[in-house]
Image (tube, rainbow, N blue to C red; front, top):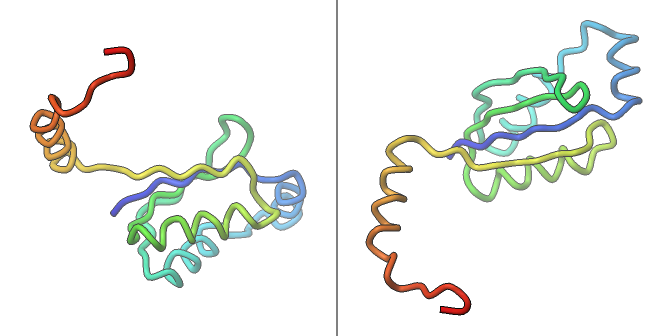
Length: 110
């Protein structure tokens, strides 16, 4: 399963990277993802909402939250968010399932 993790760097992490501009955060993230049995798909640096990173990785549904928890519990990043990414085939299957079960739910007040 594909997941996307986004995070903003903490001020002290930005200072450390400024002092050592060749620091490779991609390698550190890849090591974490691999340790959890996953595979790093992409790593991007971001600037929106402060300097940070966007990571796309392939992992099982137990490893992905564990990876996210390790990142979130570090003091190097904050505003950590994870989301599951769906392929077009998965979206079609989801839509088909929704069509199949649409009559089984009643909204509050109806």
